[in-house]
Length: 88
Image (cartoon, rainbow, N blue to C red; front, side, top):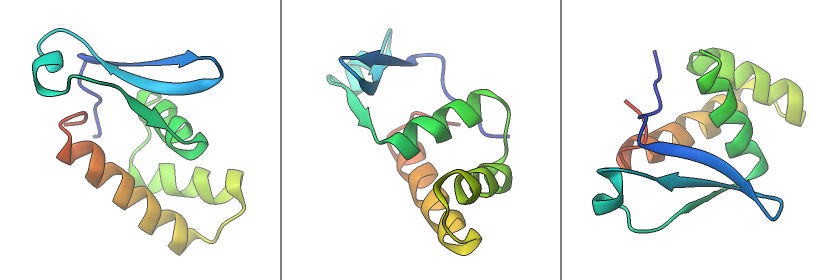
């Protein structure tokens, strides 16, 4: 199961979705992350409990891309989130 660490919150500011580190995460990431439209959808799907395959299926459907492209892109996005320590 993919889980967003509670120290990271998503906010919409001036029409942009951003991820803000809070608490102890501020020491690691002194800044914010701007999410693309796809990234914001992935974030919300993670919060809804979707697994990687479910996320890829929804991305393929919502953004009209083939499932292989969606799986590759979702995997890359989740890899970056893990690398930055945002997800477990």
